[in-house]
Length: 110
Length: 146
Image 1 (tube, rainbow over the protein chains, first blue to last red):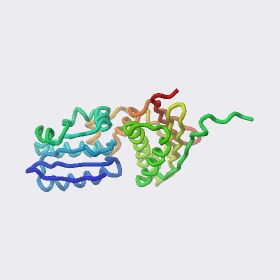
Image 2: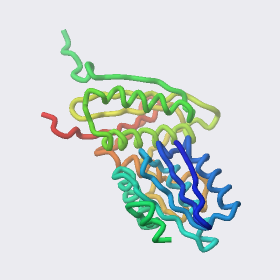
Image 3: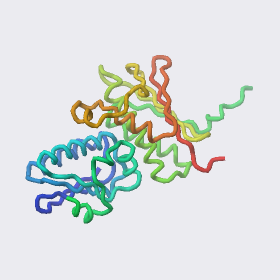
Image 4: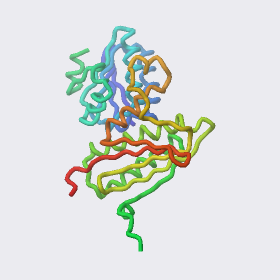
């Protein structure tokens, strides 16, 4: 998994690539935790380069969603490929996280 | 002479240890085994994800006193069949209730989400307990097979 964050005022644009699974999810948790500690309120998660997300990855997103909601922030998913969208749909996570076709569109929904 | 097992030609096996660091081996095994099928990436990702979910579950829960082996067998014809074995505590994943998202956050890891995903990502999900082993079989129909 690759993960990179870009600050945009109180918003974070986080680019995640590769596989988000039990092996890599703890790294995602750690980075998001640090960004929140630095004042990030809302997150756009750019999944354009994500191959797949497992249950461990979904759980990490859920934790992030809960933490940001506690500070009135939001999490929006951007540019997910079909197989990732399918996992969101199957798991019911599609109704928890708004999905946008691009980072720009996602920023518009924060 | 006994007729050859029709699955024998495509049958491949691998044994890994029940550790997260071993899961890449399972993934590589799956990809190499599926190479002749010329599946599109989305299709491979689904099987890969189902395999990873079951292996992670075994790694976390099957061997409470330390690690143990995970045996993989894959054969093609008809469709793709992937058998995942462990000799840990008896556990029928089919008996897990569908995940409850609230409980998933409140409790620790066991939320049933991984098994649920794995079941939904394949066409058939089977379990049996045999010779002190848990055996999960994932099957996926192949598009355009004769």
